[in-house]
Structure formats: C-alpha cells, structure tokens
Image (cartoon, rainbow, N blue to C red; front, side):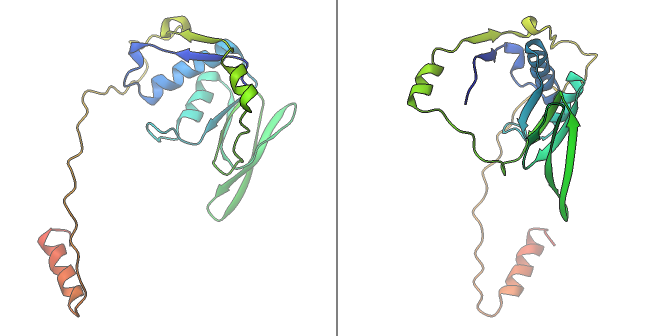
Length: 181
C-alpha cells in the first residue's frame, strides 16, 4: 500500500497487554518516527474497545477525530463526516492529529505483482519496549493485568417449539422452567 519501511514491535512483556500499554507502545513508536497524521480503524479485532485512537492522541498530545466515513486533508487540517444518531456530523481537527475511520471508506489500493515483489526488499526494523523507552512494570500508570483465561462452556442445543396452536403456552412454560421470565 505504499510503505517505505516497517516497524515490528516484539517484546514478551506485550503478551496479554491491555489497551493502555498497547496505546503507550504504539504512541512511543509513532513519536519516534515523527508524523503529521495517524490513521486507525474504529475498533481493534482483539478487544473491540474503540478506545485506542483517543488513547493514542492523548499519549501523543494531539487532537483526534473519530468515526470518519470520509477524510479530507489540507495543509493544516483534517476533516470529514461521521454518522451520528439521526444524521451526519461534520468534524475537523488541526494537524498533527489522530483519525479513526470506518469501513465506509473505499478499500485501499493494493500493489500489483511488481509492487509486491518490491515490498519484500523494504526494510523491517524490530524494536523492543526498551528501545521505545516504555517500562511495562511502571505501576504508576494504570494497567489491566490478565490473570487467567477460561474457556467458555459449550452451548446446549436449542429447543424447537412447533406451533400446533399451543406454541405460546409452550414458550411461556419454557421461559418459566428456565427462570427466564
């Protein structure tokens, strides 16, 4: 998609990291590189908290706008519409900024075969938390620590109620029997 190089942040201390540590680490890497605009998705696939863009902006000390369905960039500002209950709200922020976008934007343009082969030659730098100056053991910063992971019990098979004129009664009995009513 046009990257000149990549950063790979690898550190054992990131296993089970919460949003706070993730935001701190990403912000440190972004600040190290310098930036004008940081684009993120609306929510991550790991925790779906939707908080990471705002947390990045806070760590970086810049403005943020969230949930944009289109992005307009000028020399000094980023702007765009975002859907809200009952309509669309137009928002903007001065650059540098963090912007989260929705799936309403068009898909990115992927490179052709020649571009894919060229990407294999692009440099990838691997960094640790120490390289970024992040201390995961700094308890002065709030952290959520994962103590255990429990597998969700399997679901029991559902009950099919066939309507033979008494489905309402059967449903009511089922709800009462399972303490759902």
